Image (cartoon, rainbow, N blue to C red; front, side):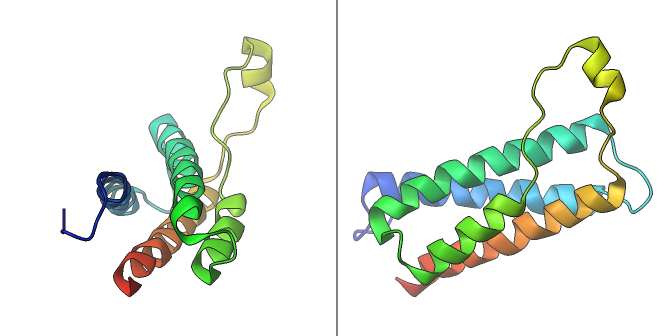
Length: 122
């Protein structure tokens, strides 16, 4: 933690770094032709965390900051996490294709890079 950072800012930075690492690992592990249930769960978790971090970053940088505006737009494009469904709903739900999940992970990675750039601009 630098002298200029508050404990809350250091905490957010740590969350961003951890999430960035998770995205990197997920990108390396995914293939074009197959995904697993854990891939979908991780993409949902990343989406939730990104939205929570963005909400907290707005407090420090304001809603009108260009990086926050762009990040919010990209975050809306990420898939929502899976909710518990009944067995019938699970059976009827079409799983995400590998290319859909890969696109989501790449979008999350781009969003993460934008958020990390915001930190560097300060």
